[in-house]
Length: 110
Image 1 (cartoon, rainbow, N blue to C red):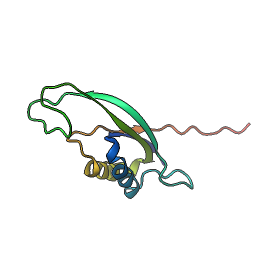
Image 2 (cartoon, rainbow, N blue to C red):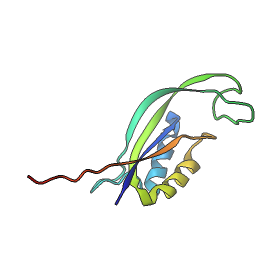
Image 3 (tube, rainbow, N blue to C red):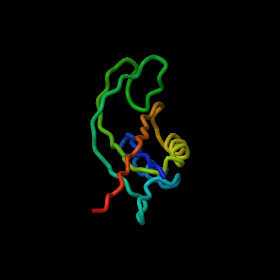
Image 4 (cartoon, helix red, strand yellow):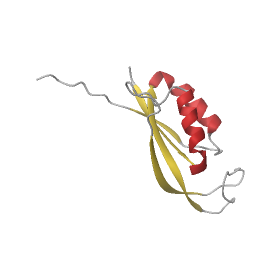
């Protein structure tokens, strides 16, 4: 089965909702483990343009802030359900949610 890595950035206080969304959609299962994630504190910029409804910031003003990047993985077949769950839990109007194919090499026996 093929798997994908999930990357999503979210305000720090929304991390629990994102983790719950990942779990509810079947992400974060690796072998005999569940709720497997990595959390990274990051900084970023964004500039809301006319017509945007920003969670944080002002139209036309370049903003700077910190957030958490949440990384996990899931079966490729679960990705649509994971995407739907993440969008429902995410506060941003335009969240950046990435699904990156994972290569799982075969271990060669000597």
